[in-house]
Every structure is written in structure tokens, then in C-alpha cells.
Image (cartoon, rainbow, N blue to C red):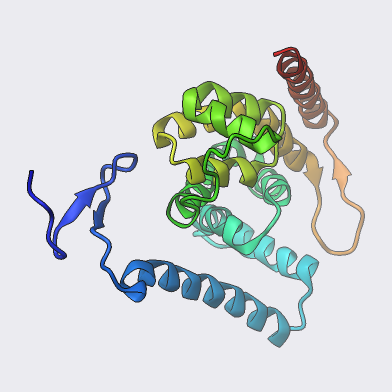
Length: 250
């Protein structure tokens, strides 16, 4: 067996498409990627903050401007998907963006764009957890909730992530946890896509049921679309209740 030199790379066992250089001995050599990522993250937050302050915008006003931009620009879907993908780094609410997707793009295109965006966002958080959370959840033999789920995710990744989606555990927590544990990304992505469908569609339809503009007037609601949204939300709650009971029994 040959020992790789400092210029050689190893293939990542979980994300085989990515090559990982063998860690140098210096601290900077081991952590330069994290420092670059941290700098980009700080830069994104600083750019948003600077734009908001320069234009006198609060969070609600900023969202209103983004919605108007996505409604009027030909690149609206791409802007929406990019914003949703960066959402875990900006600490922005996934619920608000999902509702906005239905409001801006309607029920059909809203579902398509949001499914793509939400799964891209989940993978962004997964990769962040994968590269920056190594060793945070080592198996220490404790019996806390996080450690119990961590043990199950190591053993049966797909089913555990699917259940965690059905019982509405915090979305980003599951994404980061999967990355911390370095579970297979294909199982994680498939379970996320399937387990998030009922809740995602119900919120998209709720957003699509809102009719009006953000001009200070009270918007109206489309009763038919709203009824379908409420029905799917009730179904997702029943699924959540069923899986929670099964979890308690187990």
C-alpha cells in the first residue's frame, strides 16, 4: 500500500464526485477551505445588510421588493431558486419562501420551482454540515434525543430521515444532522424529497390562494385553492401524528 504524498488527493466516500486533498500538517493548510467559506458567508450577510440599510428596508420591506423583482423579471424562477438555496446560510424562514413561491408562481409552477429549490437548499445545508461538522456528533453512548436519531441515521439513513420529515422536525436541523453524520447523500435527498411533499404542497397552495399585491390592502383568498391547501395540511398533520405515535411506541 502506497502512502499518498502531500499533492495527492483521496476520493470522498460519501460524495465520490469530489476529491479531497490529503490534509497538510499546518493549521492553515487543514482549515483554509472553512475560512474561505466563512468569508463568503460573512460577505453575503454583509451585502444584504448593507443593501437593506442603504435603502431603509426592514425584513418585511426587503421581502416585498424581492417578490416584486421575481414577479416582474424573466429571471424570477432562477432568483427564487438561488435565494432558497442560500436560505440556510442567511437564516431565512423556509415557510415564508415556500408561501412566496405559491404566491408568485401559482400552484403548478410554484410546486415545481419550490421542490427544486427546497431540495437544493437541503443539499447546501447537508454539505455545510458534512464539511464543517465532522466530529460534532461522535457516538458517546449518551441517550439524548439527538444521539438516538443519530444512531438510527447511521444504521438506516433513508427511513430515519423520511420519518423525521413526516413528524416535522426542524428542517435545517435534519439537514445539518445528516451532514454531520456523513450519511449517504442519495438516501438523504430521496427521503427529503418524499417526506417533504405533503407539507410543501400545502404551503405552496396556501400561498397560491392569496390574491392581491403588497400595497397595504388586505389580500383576498381563493376558496377552492385554500380548501385543497387545508386538506393537504390536515393529511400531513395526520401523517405526523401517526409517525409520532409509532416513534413513541418504538
